Image (cartoon, rainbow, N blue to C red; front, top):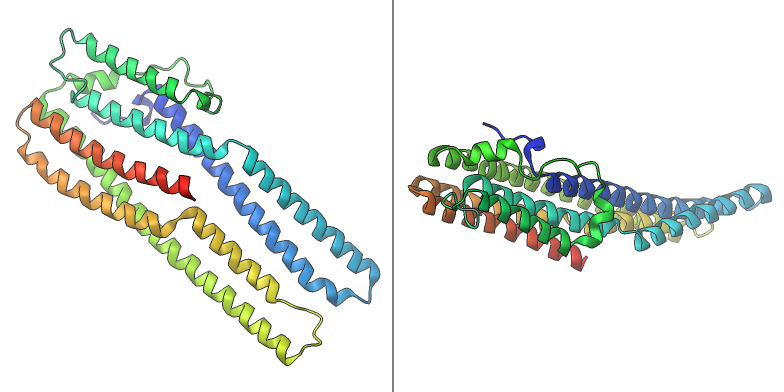
Length: 301
């Protein structure tokens, strides 16, 4: 009885999609800004080559000015837009709702399967979803309304909650812990690989800048001066690496994956609903802790 994406609460899907869209737009605009800055440096580097042709030099100067003006506008837009706010806030809402959903599905506190009447669990779940929305009401503009008519508690969620202890435990281990461990492991590898790639690009750009500087020492009369261009390229890669935080994410995801592996081993000791509730609390706290650290790192960047 696999839980599909469409079976998740409407609030989760709205926040998740809003966050992903804001992240994509923010990173694309940031990358575009860096490319424009490097382009401006490249135009400046070759403009002196056309010093004898006034029209060509004027065209290059005009193009450089336009490129830099566009980069400035993009920077101002990134500063004044709420893309970062929707990205981080939307992710915080989505992860909080997802954690609540799993606690509800398996009957863990505070949505125990022992609640009488059974509707009390639904009421509590919906009430806490409402509290999340009130706390993050400034993000409502970014969530859109496409999920407004979708349920917060799907039929599949209720169906899984109604199964026996072993089925709920098995589903939680397979679809929550194992799936999250796999995601952490893959992300750790991808971020480690990305960090190595950008480090190599930064080092290569710096080497090129050094060679260009030494060339000017040897040929001081050269009209083409590439030192500034390669320095700008290196600076752009460094800025991108700081934004993406590949090293920090790789380490954090590796630690989170390892912690969840230890918790997963405890599943064999779950013998009743109280044990399951404690087991789920440990796992969700570990996942929440990693996400909280992610938000903290983003706020400091």
